[in-house]
Length: 621
Image (cartoon, rainbow, N blue to C red; front, side, top):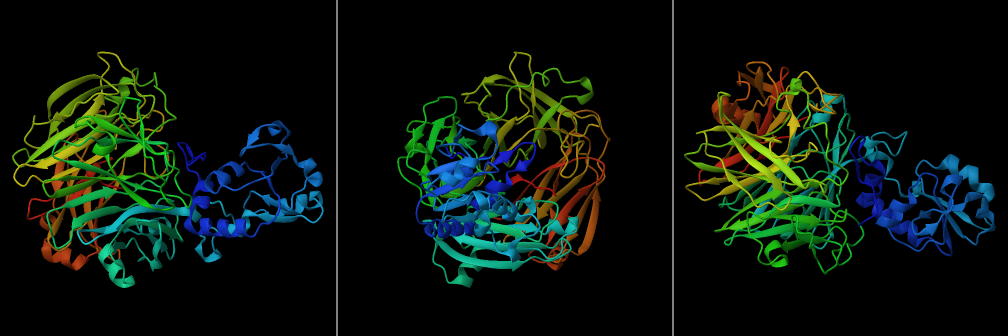
């Protein structure tokens, strides 16, 4: 496992990790290493050496610290020495493992061995014009970055869509620094784009990128760095993948989640007539060693390693059925990723159609919480995981609970099923499921509506609040499928528990909605399923407004809707606003789903006239 800290549940993303992982930082560190001659010692005033050498290995002769409590401890493979011993060392280079290190360098200059030279990580900083907060390098807003699975291979294309939501928090000019990596990790193109102000929408289309830079077919990843941002340090987007020439395949996935994890879960095993391809994409400028990545049947604890190296920023297609012969749906697969990759995509091929979805971070820092089975009745049903039940006459709707933390050995769960009016139609206790369960439930209790996966401890079991599931939908006529996954939250209660109900901004309770709904493109229409989940009794109806914005962020139309508590509604923008109004919004227009009275949960996608459709959860800001 790569010895780096990438994410903290309380503080969010680790800024140091993102600063070191930036592609330009990787190039600069390579140049820095190449310039060093003779013995190198590291002075590690801030505990950075471990991460630096994990991501960029090189020979180090000694590590020095000033904190006496750290003396003798292992630091990056070396026994930590006292800084006062530095003058007697043979170091030709003393590398201070810190940014903004001018004062630190001045403080130790008198401790240098004769003839030694000081270097600092300030020599690998990004250019000044790429910094949002120039006064402090390790400010999270300097590293609003993410990756996207990006493909244009002659058969499939990709289109990333989002909005300049940073302008809502007072950002001025926001621009994107973009680098496209090919399948072997080679940079294919690097460029910048300035985003529209005032919440304007934007898109990055693989066909346009390929034409602009004269590229051949590619399957790789797009690194995105937003500069000049305010508020959010994460680049959020929806990514459509569709067949070239308006073919049969169509998928939508959420943003990549910018922090690597040791494990990921929620990868479905293939059915006998399917191929499940895991797109493994190295997120770093150092190769992934052979044997560092493995697949395992969930709960089996018999991981099968990938016995090949994966180059820096390279993309590798892994056939799950080949790596784990004999495994079949509804079994689940766990990815042992060793913190080398951000949230991977997977592709399921069946009967000439493909669908692409993402796995989720499997937490290794959670333990069962005894407070959840004993939740106050003021929180009602507590944690809910809502998902749509699409029109039963046209679609099958299938749910599969997915373990999403290494300490989850049981999943005590029930389905609460509601019609669109919010009436409870059925409850189905699924049991206290073991970690290695192979259960997928076809939900056909209502003609249309939604269901909520909830904890139910009637047969015992434990819970940690990180309840996840995979949702699969099949068009009964065309055979096209879409799938997505997400986790549970406490919804729409005035009372709080831990950090729930979550808010997009500020402390809990989160009782408002601001969701992004993309529009369609030629041959495909946008749609959304909005769900009003409530853990306890809340307002009888939502007070939701659908606000249509053009690509420049200008609001050009609005429609009010009311969703019953525990109810749902399907939103078709072309019917709500009319085709001519959507045309006026332009290709980068979008609908902002806004509600100041309750927190809605939504799913969105596209549909075409061939029976193709996509679906994933919406993002908010």
